[in-house]
Length: 481
Image (tube, rainbow, N blue to C red):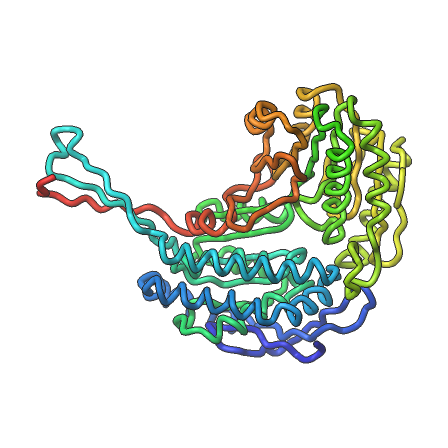
């Protein structure tokens, strides 16, 4: 894992003049050295993608689907190897890293299926008015152009897959920028795409430094930008290119609501275990991890000790150990930020029930109550293994508490009441409502995205394909309908 890794320029393995090192946040060891594209090589990749856009859009669906199926199969074949790579560069426990490889394989498989059935066209007769007699409208979707995909560090393989696979399925060339902290997993996708027959120039994977990104974002040959990352960076991108089509999957402040009817011992055990697991999986570094637990007063006193016990049962330590649930954060600086936010909350009056301890890049799974409304933890995304629990009086107060956030990505509601489920769907200002589970549930084929400051547009293979394309209508005249 310590060799120099080339990048992928228009389907070719290439190196640049400079390199940077990727190190493990767990033990500081060198994971790999990555070659950095020169400005000229970035220009070559953009020019190649722009030049091939019409050819790639016209590529038969079976060619694109076959390439996507190939990547899906190869990911499965190399699960253990790639899982170890994810764990090494990201700090993710190996059991979660293996799961990420499986999810990425599913994304490419779903994309292959969508490539075969997408863009079939809708027909609409126009003779509903006299002026449309003998006319028929056919609507199809066509690529907007080259996609610039910008991926984050927390799911370094799967969120790259969510950029690349829908673009290929839609016939849109893509230039992918993996996160600087975790580029190696994204470069693996290039290895697998290079084994296919996709047109040269239809894809590039460039580990470009962040300070080089404004020029790419501004390039008029890249009309679509798909970004996953922080609210600050995402909206800065959108504001800088208001005439481009931007999809932004940004931050969250995930809430798990436990309503009063969810009251049996089995119910509360299930809710507590799911909350504990998904406030801490990926070290809490997920936009839909559980950060807030909002419990009805009828169940609060029985739920809280269960949550604390389940959090304390999370196994922390070496990410290469199959028993580990919670590994380090992506860097020591990230852990120090979480530490400072928790300290601020405790100083302001929050009660620390467990955790609150940092060791290098690792931060112990943490539970707080009595969180003051004006502290950072109450209104910003912690992106660490920290959750707060609050008591509310009834459903309306619980839903209001969920909505009392600038974010609106997903929410979980533990209830058996079908009517309450539909009320939650209507009332909660989020992109997804998960009934009977935590907000962290995501199926990779479903529409995924947020409301308010959590972004615009949707991921999920078909949803992303729709964002990467636009409708074009064809009117046929003189028909005997």
